[in-house]
Image (cartoon, rainbow, N blue to C red):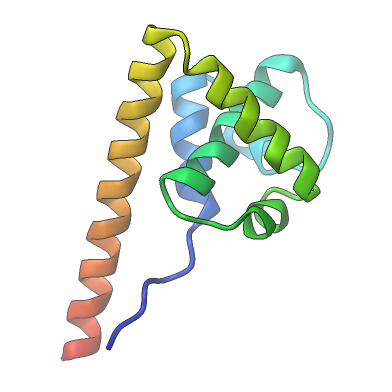
Length: 114
């Protein structure tokens, strides 16, 4: 039986960087950033947790933050989802990342069956 691979933080970071027009490298940086980059990082963390199924601890490790910061990021994005426009964009990103995750899992399963 093939198990699901660990979530790849680059997938959620790339999606959030593109959606928020933020520099990709800054999203994975351990340094503090300007507010627009911080918001994009919060979105990346949220997507990594919700769409890709990473644990809070896994998100903390991937994004070089502590678990309280990860929980705050997820709560912030959940609050922003009250705005229908933001929610629609977040839902599209979640769907796209879930589809990518499933495609990667399918390819890995095919490779292990051969």
